[in-house]
Length: 106
Image 1 (cartoon, helix red, strand yellow):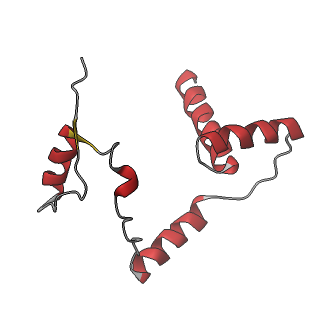
Image 2 (spheres, rainbow, N blue to C red):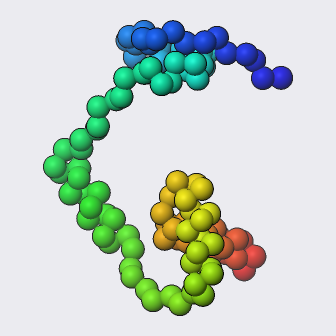
Image 3 (cartoon, rainbow, N blue to C red):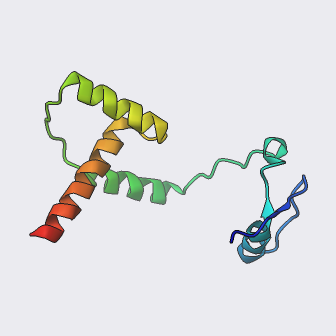
């Protein structure tokens, strides 16, 4: 049985550690105060980390040409939008899942 969470109060308390925050959110729901919470600042990686991520991203994928029916592309875009991901990302995830499944059969 799922336990009922206490409602969080705005503003949220200041946490001394990530562990303190995790313990608080395990027992408190922010659903009632979500709209009143301040927006977190955008995290900015160091230049070296950003370069490493960019290099890995570039090396990790090779472009291919794949012909799909327009209705397949439209359906993929609708499904991806509902999941808040790009449709090409969604297609890559489906391909990766299919490869894993077929790899287990072989």
